[in-house]
Amino acid sequence: MARFVDSHAHLDATDFDADRAEVLARARAAGVDTIVLVAAPRDLAEAARPLELARTDPDLYATVGVHPHDAAAIDESWWPELEQLAHDPKVVAVGETGLDYYYDHSPHDAQRAAFARHIELARSVGKPVVCHVRDAHVDARRMLDAAGVGRAGGPGGVIHCFTGNAEQAAAYAALGLYVSFSGITTFKTAGPIREAVRSVPRERLLIETDCPFLAPVPMRGRRNEPAFLVHTAEVVAAECGLSIEALANLTAANARTLFSLTIP
Ligand SMILES: [Zn+2]
Ligand SMILES: [Zn+2]
Image (cartoon, rainbow, N blue to C red; front, side):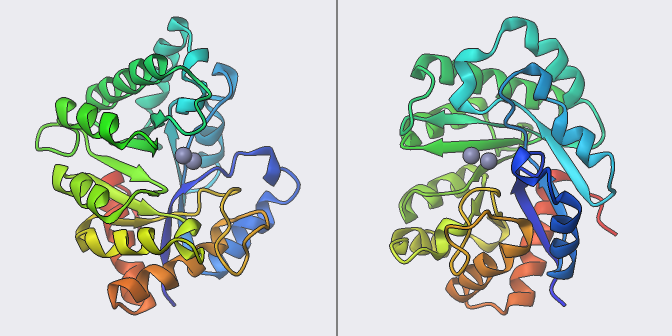
C-alpha cells in the first residue's frame, strides 16, 4: 500500500477532540502514517498544543509559530517561549507564518514583521519555515528571497496550501522552496492550481490536508482529516503522470528531506 506523509494538519484543533484516536486510526488505515501537526495558536497558551500531541505518538511531528491572521496579537514576551519550543527535537519547522492579504485579519506591516521574525527564528534553530501566502505572493517572494530561504546556508521552506498560478509556483521552486498542494487542488474550479502542480519540479512537491479545513472532492464540505489526503494525491499524481504509489513515495521522501523526519 502507498504510504503518505500529510505535511500540514491541524489535528490539535478542537474539531477533533471527540474522535482524535479514530481519526488517527483511519489515517493509518489509508496509508497516511506520518503527519506534521502545524501550529496556529490563538495565544501563547495554545502554542505548545501540536507539540504535546506529537509527543504522544512517534509518527506525529509538530511545528511552532503564529498564523499571519494573528500576527497583530503577538506580544514581544511570546518570543522567548516560542524559541524554546522551536528547539524541541519533535518540532520540525517554524510556522505557520507568512502573509495573508486576502482575509486581512492583521495589518500588513504586522504580518510582515511577524513573518521576518519567524524566518529569523527558523534560521537560528536550523529548521525550515512553513509559509501561508494568500494574495501576497509579491511581498512573500521578496521577503523569502531577501532572507535566503531555500538557498544553501539559509533555512528551508514550503509554501503550504498553494493557491497561486503556475508562474508563481515555479518562481518559489526556483528560489529553492517546496510547494504543497491541498484539497483545493481537487476542486472543479482549480484548473490554474492543477496547472501549477505541473510547473513544480517533482523534487519540490508536497501534499497536505490542512485539516480540518478544505476537504478534497469527493469529501468537500465535510470536516477534513488526514485519511482524505488520498483524494488529493490521486489528482496530483494524475497531473504528474505518476502512479499513486510513486506520488506517495515522492512526496513522502520530499517531506522527509525538508523536515528532516526520521521515518522507519
Ligand atoms: Zn495556512
Ligand atoms: Zn494550516
